[in-house]
Structure formats: C-alpha cells, structure tokens
Amino acid sequence: MICETTLAEAYTSVDWLLFINWGTEYVGMVRPGDLRRALALAQPELDEHYRRAYLSPESREMPSQQPAAQVLNALIQEFAGRPGGEKALRFLVDSKWITENVRSISTVHVEHSGPFDPLATYQLLQADTPFVPITKGQQLLKVIDRVGVATAIALSAVERRLGRK
Image 1 (spheres, helix red, strand yellow):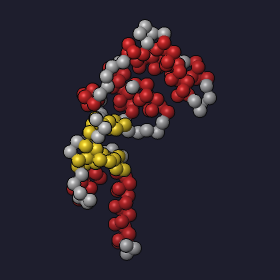
Image 2: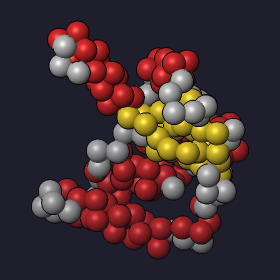
Image 3: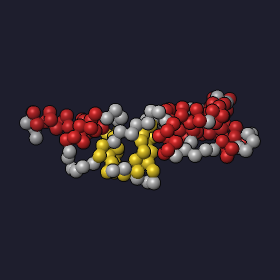
Image 4: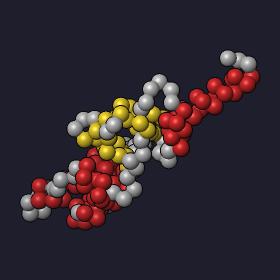
C-alpha cells in the first residue's frame, strides 16, 4: 500500500483518499502524504526500498511521461533481490490500523436528514476538507463538493438580491 500511496502522492492530483468498510461504512479521509508517512513509520524498510527505487538511475533517465512506471519497475527489482520478496514486508492495513495510526485522518461527515436541513448545510460548510461525506448512521451515501455547495448557495443569494430569480 505504501507504493500505491506514494505513487498517488507523487504522480497524480489525488488530494484525499476515502476509506470505507464493507463497501458502505464510512471510516474517514486522509491525504496521500499523511498515509504514506504513517505507513513508512510502520514499515521503514518498505519505505527505504521505495526511496532507492525512486532514486535509481533508470527512473531518472526515463522521459517524464512514464516515471511512475519506471519507479514501480525499479521497486519490483528491489523486492526481487530481498529474501522473501515483497511478501515478507506485507502487513494488514485495515480501517482499524488507519484510524489508530494515521493521526491526521478526517472523520468529519454530515448526517443526512432530508432534502434540505439548515444544520446539515451549516456543518457541510464548516468542514475543513474540500469534500464532505454524507452519511446515514455509519453508511456512506455520497460525497459532496463543499466549495461547489458554497458557490451554489452564494450564487443563489446574489441572484435573489439582483431580482434574477
């Protein structure tokens, strides 16, 4: 998982990872870099393998369009040379591990209570993440773009003041 998380952090625009249990139970959200750091603390040897692969001559000499693939190939070669290979470094990363080891996990969510709820809207706007999970109990219903909602509310209010709606 450290490899995927590190590659997501380095080579994509993914800002947040959302974790759920059993397909629908909301656990929390975390930034890829925060998860990578927690994984590196739990498995320093795996992080060291990744660092060596990332700095390998093959990955530096390749065209910029495919550095992630080159880093991944170098990492596979690192594992192949290690007794027990990648399997010897595996450990279970489940929701319990994430909530206990990733200090910056955001468990902020808004409880769904109907089509429009002023309190839920207020909680949504007060969240400190760009996306806010909407739940019913522990079940994740959807994830809302907080800035998009704030923009729509502001636009609606301004349009009303201008007499356009």
